[in-house]
Image 1 (cartoon, rainbow, N blue to C red):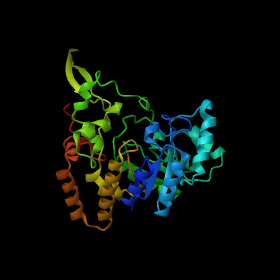
Image 2: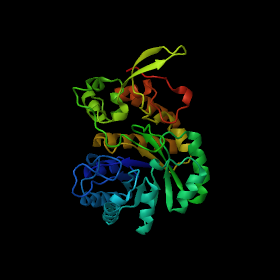
Image 3: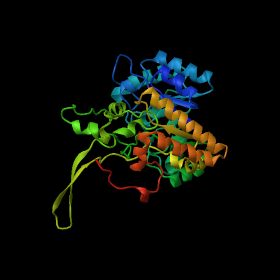
Image 4: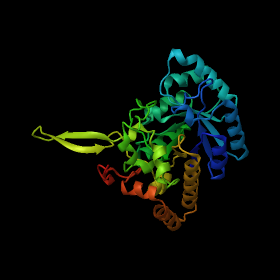
Length: 348
């Protein structure tokens, strides 16, 4: 059965997520001397504060039979930052981590140059979609590929079929806000939300609740969590008809990737043979990380035991008890659902 791969951003979160049933943890670390920056594709506030905390997380994980992967997956490498990336990697490896998640070929070559003897996981930033790309990364030392967020069940099955004989695992996303940058380049990585007085309507949008599914049900918490995500902003949109007339459409989340949850499709996802199920949420509160890990742990266990009636009962019970999850279902923010299941444009 696939491993449950959970995000953490604190020692407390690591302890609680491990108790919730995580098989693997993944995390970033703030850069030394900086309160805000990291090399992990997330702001420093979403990372462990220092190398000492990383060591403590590793010790906790190993004591519980779990592993820790470091997110060193900023999607670019340049000569100007090579010196501090080398120091960062060396310090993190020294804390006993089990694997490196790398999001750039330049960074991957740097890891090889440093002769780091750890498994290397190819980040979704590398956008691996076919056997040829997987073969290249295998030659460069990659042992696991994190599939793109928009991969379909058929694509995952094909990747597993082609990569497993080569000794390469496939990891798939299961829960958390999805990325709309399917080409692997994010231009919103360090964007900040406009001031409240400039973009007040965002606070009341219908999709605010998706950032807290399976964790919180208070509107205040849900809004504060999701308010940082530029991809979810609503934009004023117009369309041009065949007569070249312009019509106002309304306010739409036009760059929102429109996915968040995979609970209903979990049996089919497990059947693809993926090695890991990844929860997105390094920037989420500890409560979200813990609750979501617990939910997926329980549901995967039910699938493993063949108790499918109870599986469906549990999913239905989650819907009934969580207003946030009902919002996701109503707007069909589903990983791995067929394209024709999309409801079209959600109401702002």
